[in-house]
Length: 541
Image (cartoon, rainbow, N blue to C red; front, side, top):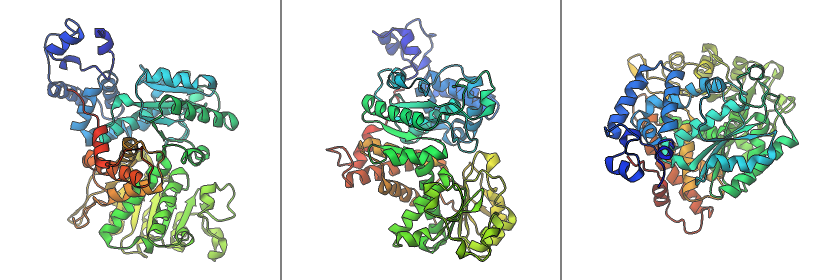
C-alpha cells in the first residue's frame, strides 16, 4: 500500500481534504488529514477567496503555483472555473515578471528537467529522473534565450514551459501527469543574471556552435528513447537556433515550434477572421510585418503559404510581403539576413528613394499595406501618423500589435479604432477590454498562441502523428477563423478566451483528421473525434 505521505506529497494524486472517508481508509490516510471532508467545490471556494486576497500580478501567480505544486486536481478545477481571470496570471503577461524573478523566488521544483551544457553526458538520466516513471506524451522545452518581449533569461525561462503546459491541460485536457517541462541551460548573456548571486543557472556566457548543437541532439535522441510517443514543443529559443532546430527535425518526428508556427497560425487565423468580417479576399492584401525575427518570419511564411493555397504562385505570393526590422525595410543587400528573411526581401530598384525607407511612416507611405502585424517589441511604433497613413489607402486596415508583455505593445487597440473611425480590424497580443467608440462596442481579439497551440499539439498526440506539417497547421488556423461571428456588430477577429476548451477540441479534431488523411497517424487511427475524446483527462474529484 502506498504510504500516506507519498500520496499527500504527490501533486498528481493529492486531493487534500477532498479525500472521502472511504478513500482515506483505502489509502491509509486516516489520521493524516483533519476529520472534515470537503467537496472540491468547497475547496475551490475557499482557495479562490484566498487568491482574491493577494495582490494582482506576481503575488497571485505565486499563490496559484503553490496550489499547482501540491494539488493538480484542485488547480485545474479552479482554472476551469476562472479561465479568463487566471490565463493572464499563470501565462502571459504576468509570466514575464515570474520569469525575471524565478531564481529569487524559487522554493520547490515543478517537476521540470534541467539539462546542462556543462554535463551533456547526463541528459538521458536527467530526463528520466524528472519524469519519475511517468508516461510522458508531451514535452515543452526552452533554452530561455528568446523569451518573447524580455529576451535572454537563461534557466529562468523554464517557467514559460511550465506555463505552456498548464494551458495545454486547461485548454485541451491533456493529463498533467503525462507532460514534462524541460529547461536547457546553455548559459546566459544576460549580465543582470550573471551578476546575481541568487541565479540558479550556469553563471557563464551562452555556449554556441557544435557544443550547443550536440546538446540539442542528445536531448532529442534521449526524449525519443525514453518517451517514444511524446511530442516535442520548442519554446522561446533565440533567433539563431529556433528555425535551425525546426528545419533539422521537423520531418523526422513530431516537433512543433510555437514562436514560429504557433505565431504564424494565430496571425493567419486572425487575418482570415478579419477578412470574414470585411468581406475582402486574402489574395488582394499587402502585408507588412514589423519585426522580422522568429515570430515575424513565422507569420510571413504561414500567410505566404496560405496565399499559394488560394491560387497564387509562390513567387507571386512572396511579392505581397514587406519585412521591416531594426534596419528598416529589408532589401536583398541588407547585411546579416537570416535564411528565412532572405526569402522575402525586396530589391532597392523597386523604390525611387530606397535609402530613406528606414522608419515605419516612410515605409507605410511607400508600400501602402492593407495588413500590418507587429512583433517588434517597440512600444508605440504604430502611432497616429502611421495608422492614418495606412488607413488612407485601405477601407478596413487590419492591424495586429501583438508584441507582449503589455509595456511593449505597438499600439493600444482603443487608439487604433479612434484613429481609423472604427474601421480598423484589430487583434492584440495581450488581453484587452471591449472598446466603445461613438456608441458602438468593439470586441478585441487576443492574438495569443494559447488559442491554437494546445489544439495542434493535442490533436497530433491523440493520433500519434509522425510529424506536424503545414497542412495540419493550416487546418488549425482555418478551424479557429471559422468560429468568428462576422455579422455581429464590433465582432472580434478571433474567438474569445472564455471559449478556449470548446474550440480547442475542434482544432484538435481537425489536426488529428489531417494527420489521418495524410497517412501520418499511427496504424489503426481512423476516427479523429474518438481519438481526441479518448485522450482527454478527467480529474477524479
